[in-house]
Image (tube, rainbow, N blue to C red; front, side, top):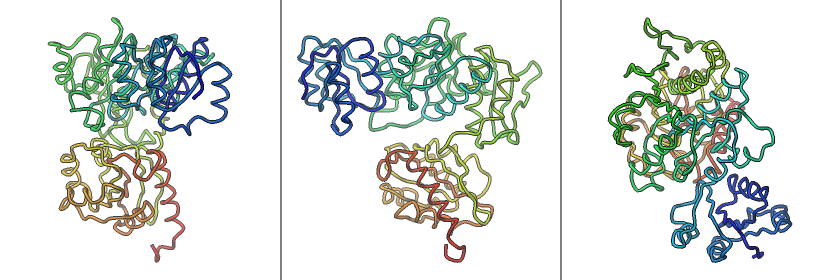
Length: 461
């Protein structure tokens, strides 16, 4: 283990860890970075760290480095568990612990709009950025979507507005981060292995409200307001809350349903973007549009510009992405649906009979609502992945069940069960780590399987 006298211990050397290491180095400070997998430190990484007097090692090395009197803080990547040994020892020694998001946030100029939620946050971030950019506003996005906040802080090309996706893990430590705007798309059961109960998960998400500037705005669904007020110990809706939906009249600009996006006017609701105007499908995508449109309207963008951008939006990969067709059977990739609520929303997006490919690494969420929805909408359930034995028993009787040993096998069997006009939908309700690197890898493999299906003569499929 190389020797240094670090001011900061960084836990994890993924996207966040690499970004904050470079940010700290740019400030002329020293760090030690630890990771349970030493293979993440490439020869180039090691040479760079040695050249600036910094060092790296495993988690045990990180624990030992906390004894250096020079250490003034620990910076943790989002996925690091609460019980990590470096974090535990830092608590005992009363050394401050920061998230990468929280540490780097103060170095961003301009307005900061934070977006979180169990589902829909990435689409909302992309939509909002597109709308602001098309309106001539200088904007950058990052956070939990590939570009760390540290990287944004290091970028010499600054923006007027930063739209930041933020996960519940990152929201656990955002002390000192004050947002100009905040969007909370929804809160449903997820990350059950991380949190003791749903309330702990909810409280982490609601930190996005607690960290608003005094003049900042908060956007959420109208149907969620009573629950949020209760959890935040509020007895009325604050004036800076703006709601999406038709359940309340106060501070509501937009409403979304299966027909599209509606604008509230003095005369009632006016449909401004219909299903035939867009290149994506799904009521929940229109709800994401409503969140982004509300934030953009508050930021001064005209309704005309907002509508034009939404109509040009193609949607994002792995989110109800149409990827193929064979003999009238359509194939959709919804690999990002890693929890039951996301799958329910996907199933609600189609009127046609559905053959659903489900399964992967189960996350411990309540599956009862999904089971009810499958009974109503799914003709055949194709199970694949680690969860197959459990799901075969749990969903017994809700639909015809077929098991598959691989994605190729799942696609072929799903196609065999379909008729012209049916939908084959990959929407797993599970994490992907039993068979794939991430949900993108799983979705890409599904697309490849659909492409391979096209090359097989119909009589042999």
